[in-house]
Length: 86
Image (cartoon, rainbow, N blue to C red; front, side, top):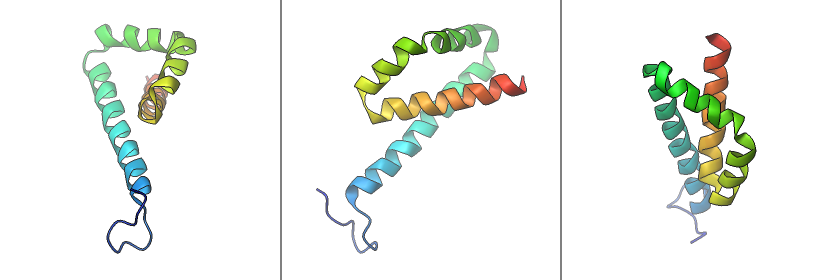
């Protein structure tokens, strides 16, 4: 399971899976941000509620695993950028 993928110069399967986790998290977070931008009057209050309840959301994401943390992180970065420029 921790072997080398093909003859890729020492890239392990774990490294590939971590990379895929990051890509998947970026795609999911981007989809959430597109949804917020396309319906701001509906979803912006939801996003702000998520931010205000971060004390609950962050521990839940930590228990859920690395992918949940990545999605939350990228979502918060995107939300911060959106809020800064709006």
